[in-house]
Image 1: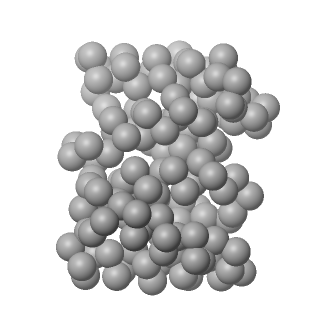
Image 2: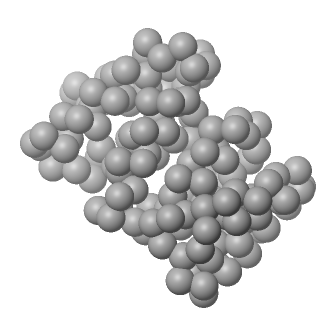
Length: 139
């Protein structure tokens, strides 16, 4: 699959009321077409560009890209959070952190979460969420 094609498909459903249903249909189609790690970047960029969409909890897009944990997902997610932290991507980062053992990978994820606090692209609610996660991690 071509990342540009994925981005265009997501744009076509962005304003639909039944976004979660439509995104589930898209992710099913991507799975049938053999979509892989090339889907991660356009999905994360779409999330960054559409802060008001109800993606679901966590929603089909998150479930789809999380299938690629250990295959490049974590790196792309950290890049997204560094670029433009969003409530959903910070929440995803926390999920990855919770599933990562102590060591360099966990420290790096934790550092990315810490940098959300100083990221000018982060809104107030995203910073609050990152702080909440960081407090829980410190316990």
